[in-house]
Amino acid sequence: MSSPEGAPRDVLPVHLLQGQKALVTGANSGIGRATAVALGRAGADVVVNYVVGPEEAEKVVEEITAFGVRAAAYQADVSDEEQVVAMMDRMVREFGTIDILVANAGMQRDAAFTEMTLAQWQKVLDVNLTGQFLCAREATKEFLRRGVVPEVSRAAGKIICMSSVHQMIPWTGHVNYAASKGGVQMMMETLAQELAPKKIRVNAIGPGAIKTPINRDAWETATAREDLLRLIPYDRIGDPEDIAYTAVALASDLMDYVVGTTIYVDGGMTLFPGFATGG
Ligand code: BGC
Image (tube, rainbow, N blue to C red):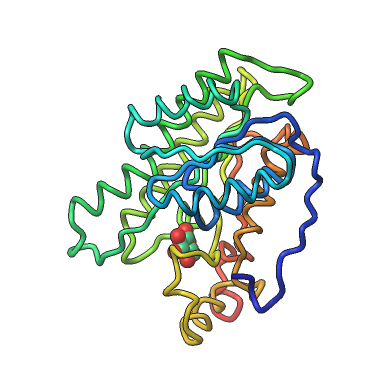
């Protein structure tokens, strides 16, 4: 699914994350998939979490193990406390520990406000916000138990919350999604403040329009694509690798002093592009 603007270049330093163990939730497709692959390419062992679609998850595992690192697919619904606890226990048992959590699993259930059901509201909050809370909490327990291992990383652990430009851009017809991402921002900043003294770095990535199945409607047809590009000053739709490479850098000691920040990776979508000609 690479853009007509050109495929992303593979410029990853291959030993950057050597010896680190990463868990990526929702890693069987889209941004999660690209991030899991990039972490493996950069030398980490990777757990590929998924909730449905074991075949895709196994393909991601194969792609990662081809780099000579370990990978395994774990099924768990991130919004289910017992399943998250069991997933983390299994990771510690089978991989020894966790150094990097990419809390990525997320979904949209779009509807105009008065049409939105409580079930649509709740499901999106459960997966996008509660899911990140549960995974971050369980990962943090292991980071605290193990502490800093200087040969591996300067930090005791790194949490990357996958947020969205919609943690700051309101979005008609998507109140559940925008509210969940606004929640992710404040959760991330609060955790960052609370955990920094323990040498745990919590940050977020705010992707803009990245070409994945979640927003197929926005890029599939020429008209939709044209409308979308009007919102992107850099004039290209993002590739999953744009997010994946940011996640690799953020998880690495290259960014050891980055704490409690959201990095927007959005081709300028958060720059109020309407004001380039108006206002
Ligand atoms: C949403 C996409 C959307 C993008 C930019 C993302 O968080 O999941 O559907 O295209 O934000 O609006």
